[in-house]
Image (cartoon, rainbow, N blue to C red; front, side, top):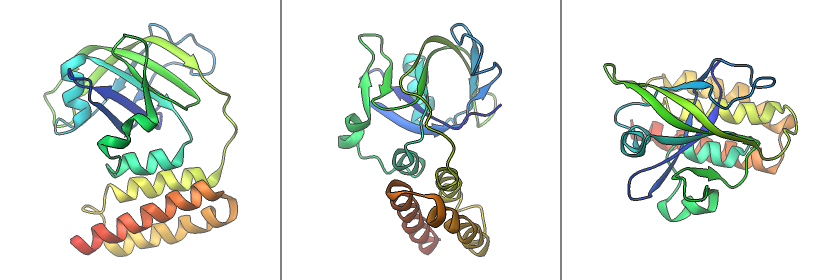
Length: 199
């Protein structure tokens, strides 16, 4: 299963990066003890996440429904001065976790296969905690995630197809979203429009 998540990592100097990522999870998140379980990250070698993992071999995978964070992280719009609004250190461990999330898995890298542009990195869960209960499903939050994915692919997808997909997602925001979802979707729409103009 691919888990839509936010991954935090830091380099040797302690500079933290926040990135959306879909790790592959091979255990039952609801029923199995995650400690000692493995998950697979697949960052591009050009990414800060990849470089950080090469530096420290530590990361934290988060389950969150914070659509503002998901939207900004997807398009690399989190300023360096803003990072600590979102994260805090986990004691002296070298892991950095989100200040607010449903659940997190602090992992230590076990193996790295970088023979492809997208590296395959296996991590072992060393710590995990449920921070707050999952509130429930919301179609608008899912629509923001889909819009964020579109925003990262403006160089790959035809403009008419992108606009068509956004038009399908917009009613979900209007019908089921709150202020956070509306704001995140509008931010992504502006980002997409800007990127398409630059093509």
